[in-house]
Image (cartoon, rainbow, N blue to C red; front, top):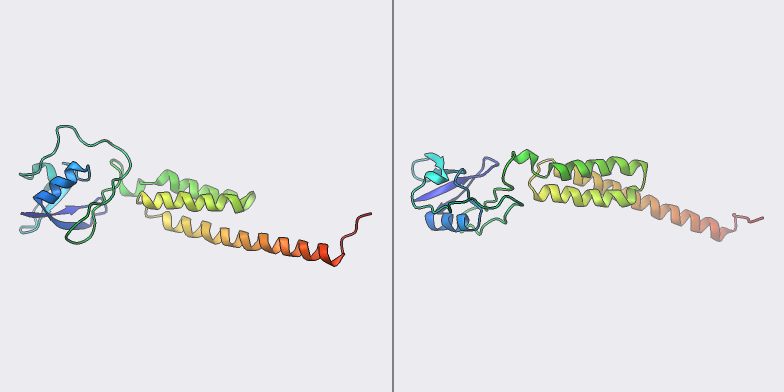
Length: 168
């Protein structure tokens, strides 16, 4: 028998056979509460109800998302962090990226916007669907900030070399 894994994003991944699913269980990538869909019948059931799957008596540790298993079939399966909804994954990092974007207009944007890019990348890695917009906004402002900074230095250097500045 082969099953599709229904990801937290609602997508179907697989199909995978019992041996592959058991290896994902061992690696902490498949929980007994996750939905599987029988390839032949289309019947959906919790992974813990599938005969032949060997879940440990205690669940895997809660923490950061595990890397996607090597799926010999189609697509990769990565369930993301345990708990919460997919939209909340990386929400703290995404909020920080947007705050850094806004504060960068007031002070030190050339320093804060690259940090915002890093935070948006982290939110994206955690699966937050809104991370791309924050990343693009911080990248655009970083590029504009660098252009203005270089322009300021060029203008200052030109003024200094032309002798228009006088010291009395």
